[in-house]
Length: 402
Image (cartoon, rainbow, N blue to C red):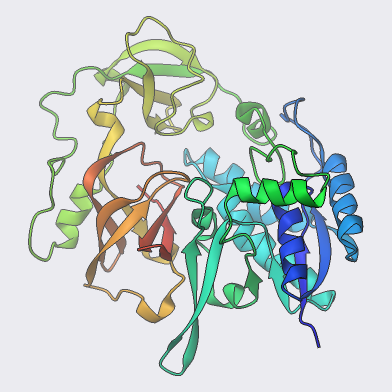
């Protein structure tokens, strides 16, 4: 008897081709479209709305002769993704809703709906791969990067669990985006030339301050430029290389501290509408001129409602040697090789999607995980996810605390 796979049909080319690949592999395939958002506040008018996505998803299901279903998951999506996002921005942090959506919706709420439709597996159009290995007498699932380095989406899945991976399928893992487009054209799929979705997962491309003002109040405050930081020991271990030996938690804490700026330490150069609308490393949206190089956000104080900026990519305040993840925010996909307290290991790490992997050493200590990079990193933003890799395998991840 054929195994049934329920694939999330989004109305895009990736999920369309993924559904076809599964049929070719001999699975009993059903399509499930999920609507996760109703509000259009802040949505840019040029974006297609969910009705268009639904129409394309239905067309693909009909073309491929597979059953088609739809479900409204806007309730759990708002509670578990959007409300979390608002709360993080209110604290001056920068969440990643796409990572949360995969953990909380696609491989949780959506997976439950798929099981009710008789699904043995849940499939998505992500560009990543899954492998099965034996660790002792247990089956272990490995999450691997996709073949297409330009489209690899393994980072967005860095918070999934072994239980979620067990029933997950990624049909596009061994394909490149151009290959997917060619397949769609050859099959005559309506989504062959459809543009990829952008912006917040299932919401779309939004004007972020307008979107956030649904919950967060706009409040004018000062933009302060930090120019002279000479003599300030902001990053005592900023030099290349990592001190040898087994580093104490005290030293690691010092290495990963973010510098706390004060309004008196800089010059007021502009006005903003709310510090919580900005993120570390941000370059646009300040509307301040008169500088040779671009201004970057290097600090945010939501209590004082101040945004601190520095000029140029080489500004010391923009670059950090390390970061810290609290113990309760540290997640291991490979639980069988989880680091123990006091242990340290070398891994490759990325702190944002599309960032090239960076060499780093991870230190597991009582309070959490300290990640010290081989080279200083630009724009480390609290609230974002750091994911660590061994080769092309995602081993674990965590929410950046500082």
